[in-house]
Length: 109
Length: 121
Image (cartoon, rainbow over all chains, first blue to last red; front, side):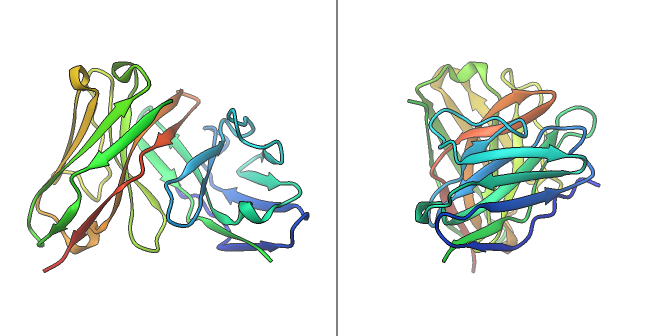
């Protein structure tokens, strides 16, 4: 299966830890990435290759992987982290495809 | 700074055509594969099409295959998406994006700001 499954929503209070999961059979074979999309803006990359953080992304963002599930963890959530988060994987060999999870709305209460 | 700017979106009737453009700057455009992606109103992200550095590989999502054509002009740092036989469900914000990564995993970074396409009678 090429589907990626995310919870529709996660809510936390400022300072707490938010964990967003993404599950899919393709994940052990290919790295996953995470994008953040704030309201009215284009997506931006926050994690690549399961665990790597691009330059400029705060250290409170981290990624992990276990079997068919990858997890985006935001430690010490801040109000500015409120956004939609999407996981994505791809297979560019064989049947070429890119797949996105359905997205998770992170609400900071 | 790497920058991508889309243009060409607008209102079009079902069955009509539209050509989107994407201008790249701040990087060596000809060295990177590129993608078009889209997001329907209130919905998630969807990969639409990709193009290799030499334009010899142009995969498409099943939903647009046979109707959309992706192309690039490396001499002008430009990416294009020719859309024809448009349907109401093609309504979305269309983003271009630079492809990064390798065979272990690929991703888009950065994304352009997007251009809206509305298919309606």
